[in-house]
Image 1 (cartoon, rainbow, N blue to C red):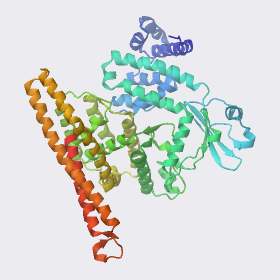
Image 2: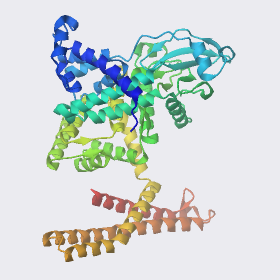
Image 3: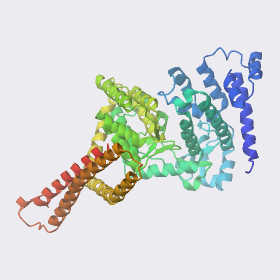
Length: 562
């Protein structure tokens, strides 16, 4: 094993800083467990006045002060925790929300940096480059510039040495999380280790400007035919992992009501566009903005929407999107059994101690929703309650689910600023209708049917060997009589159900093929009474019957899976 001296040295330096800060703010108990040393010396330091007055502040105030003092990585982690109102006390959340990812800019010789990083002559590429940044955060500073062709651009420049600082912070932060998981039950209850892992992945993505460049390109590609959005355009020849050059978008924050009204922009139209574009990101592309707060969503003078800062995005596979659609449909239509089955398929880990308690919790939540008017429905409260149910039942969901929840809560907050009487359910209903229609189109059902048939064929093919294996266990005495009879009966019933489902699928596909054959031989010049929209009436009949058969088989197969 090679001893990584540089890593240990970075970690040692950050540990020394952590010891000083924890001591200053009176967290000697944690410090003692972290270092394995007696905390008397640390307490003595506090008694001398190094942390005068801090011990009298509330626990949560001191915790926030520690996070701020530790630096940008910890501030970002604190901001992540501030979004989990379902996990932490309200007083702590209020303190964490005070954390700002904004730090004073450091002086940079930007022309020299650009020439060194990009291998260009600034005077030949740019007409003007601002000397001072107009925004400064923990990872990067952002400047305005004008190219020789007159186009205005944004230059995002990574702070020198920031990767080394973040890496050292993450090493130490992981130790701190492990310590809290080991000694404190609350850390285990909120799955602090999983929150940290998602955060670690996210911050490494933000550190990579190459990754952000890919995100910008993908985002623009997804919406290339959409007229209501303005997408950032990257300049790949003027970008690398430390510098990112992209188009400048003129616009105002989406929640700046006064500015929007002054420009004659309709607030409800703006809100509808923003929601529609976000839902498209989620359900059509599975590639969505991970932090859609008001500062990251602009409205252009023409009323178009622009999403900026794509350093971090949520990503979902096609199967993730389908499960999410199932989740939403079961949730909206208050189907507790279907919702629980979908949660089980989505969950990263699950250890439900009592299934009946979980079902009752969800049904009670549905009852609460039913008792509220749509105007009274608080999305944040609803998600908090639901997340509490997941936590009590030891259910951990994928990170994209939490990112999506955060996004919806942020967008609802924006919506209520634009329209105080916002009915978020009414705004989302059209998208639910689109999902249902897409689910029940013939080609979608046909595709599902073919996949289900292949699965069924595999199960039927494997059934004889499974039966033989079961009989071998019986002969070997590995199964008790009661279990044997139960398993065989279940196997027989499922076989009968599978055969009935297969009949419907085969009949539906045969009717669909028959409809195509009839239409292929149909002559357009035949009497209009035998056709509708240019398609033979007989073809229409076969086509409708095929959809019904495949639909019945699909519904019956879902009943088996649930």
